[in-house]
Image (cartoon, rainbow, N blue to C red; front, side):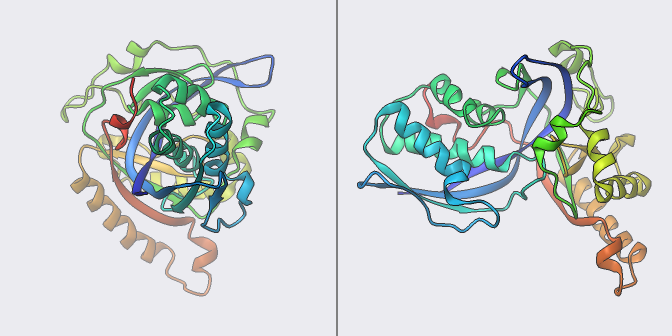
Length: 313
């Protein structure tokens, strides 16, 4: 049995929608940044061939869960007669644009590839993961990456040491509806990796421009989800960002993030924001209605996935 396997979250430092394929999939360019906010999984082999998730997930049926679908996909692909018992301890919020479900699925594929001794390469697992969702391959790739296509064409990217204040608004955002919104722009001009990685922010040793580009999904989310708009407005008025960098949405939302050179500065900003929340939303009778912030977490950027060495390249 494998205990406490990490399934880290990701941030999209920018996210451009540059086109749409005939099959409806959107063509993207983004930079995926792994962070140390993680779910934890326990995975064990079953001899009866059954795939069992023994954790209740609110609103997610057993057979619809990506961890179950991932295990079954590996079973079908390899012809393995073994099964799996999977337990998930969620720390990454759902409907947040942090890739929690995709990361859980990737960790299950990596773990079962080892437990079942199926011997798939990293590329094989990434291709299998793509059938489950566009964000799954990057977690198997295991490094920060510049991504193109529908998110599966990945180029490893060296990013600076960095901390982030990840802010969860008091509202979830389902991904599918955002990509189907008629107001979503799908014609952003493509960029090259050097457009991002070749810039510098002076004064804090950063070798990539973390204010580069934008998130094309953000205007759609802000239009449809007023609590996310309120949270973003409040954060930007708070002016606690490092070097003037404003809060930005990750993925399809709802989580927002602010970049800092280190965790000490990020934690200092979090404490000041908590104090400001208590002042701005001090009327306890209506605070739950008016306060658009559900949680704020300081996260460090990761250079590689914790299970990076578990897969043969």
